[in-house]
Length: 220
Ligand SMILES: C[S@@+](CC[C@H](N)C(=O)[O-])C[C@H]1O[C@@H](n2cnc3c(N)ncnc32)[C@H](O)[C@@H]1O
Image 1 (cartoon, rainbow, N blue to C red):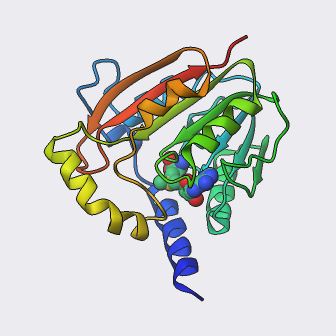
Image 2: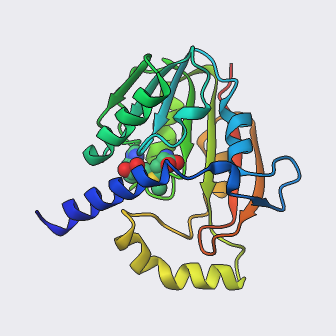
């Protein structure tokens, strides 16, 4: 087994373990609307309808927050995540799910076929952020939404940002291409989707904070 395969296996095992953590105990700082990550996920995912596609669902940490009657497709490139996600879905009694291999840069679904695309802590890791966002735009139906929760770069010149920039070269090699210092909020308005609404907040885990969370809508 080469190092990259071992890392992917270990990462999947870690994400599987993280499913047992209670997202209600991850407190949001400087976020007047929501107290915890669990509350935020309930608000963003709990009312979705029809056809939902989640990029990089990992071990399925968000599955518990979706309504039962949606039709869910997950596109997850790390094959070692799949058994953990399938186990999570089984435990939750979710039947209407389809887990596919693939990447956000090349989503294996037709144009304008999805009502909502979801990403939680994935845009930090994709190989090509612009291409991923263009793919999301391609597969969304007119009026569809892209819903996201992402950790992002700290403010330019801040200590957080200096630490993120310093640690990032090692971090991304250890954590499956996760970048600490992506300015994702700058790219979102550039992809030609319509409204961009998001909150900014922090969590008490240094380096993977601040966060942004919200949605972008495609023109009707
Ligand atoms: C930090 S994990 C987050 C997993 C899950 N979304 C969650 O919130 O627990 C990042 C996930 O993104 C996936 N990923 C990495 N590169 C990707 C890409 N190019 N397209 C889609 N998913 C990708 C990884 O395999 C992993 O499952």
